Image (cartoon, rainbow over all chains, first blue to last red; front, side, top):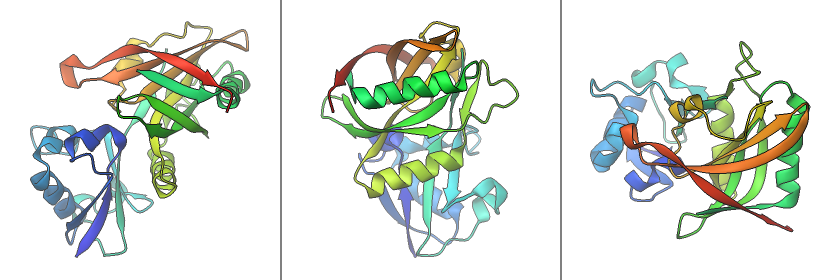
Length: 92
Length: 146
């Protein structure tokens, strides 16, 4: 089923400059894999060489961090929205 | 590249740094990009600093706040164009930690030095490139009337 993925401004150059991409998937993992299959340049900005989600990349299903759901295996439904947000931190 | 921001919003985020002194403040700049990569800020959204272990020299914005701000901005036809934070009793220059923890390529990172509780200098830096080539470049701030 189609599900919306919101692309942060920082990653749009690697996603055809699109802000929202619809992918067909039954789980969050499927959605992300479909996304990087469609936009291969995104892969190294989301995943490590071992294929794990980068530690500074946060993926939310609606308002929930998938780390606290079932991670990649989290099921999705048509009305859901996946948000990708790189972390924001620093200090003097 | 230029960061264009209304005076009222710049004053507001500088005041935020004074209010949280001696701790770092942080927030999100919402607005739009132009064709050349310049940005116009239309809102400065305050965020909490989750680094309660070391708030005087570190900041971190909760991802859940970023998700909400990104979603609301996009619904309104805007985008996240950058972030701001303060450096209490420290210059308004990016630090090694700021660069290491920056991941929003193309976005602005606006830093305000707060000296003895008063906002002093505000500087903006745009994050360019990724991995080993990642770096900050100085960015002019254009303050507008509205």
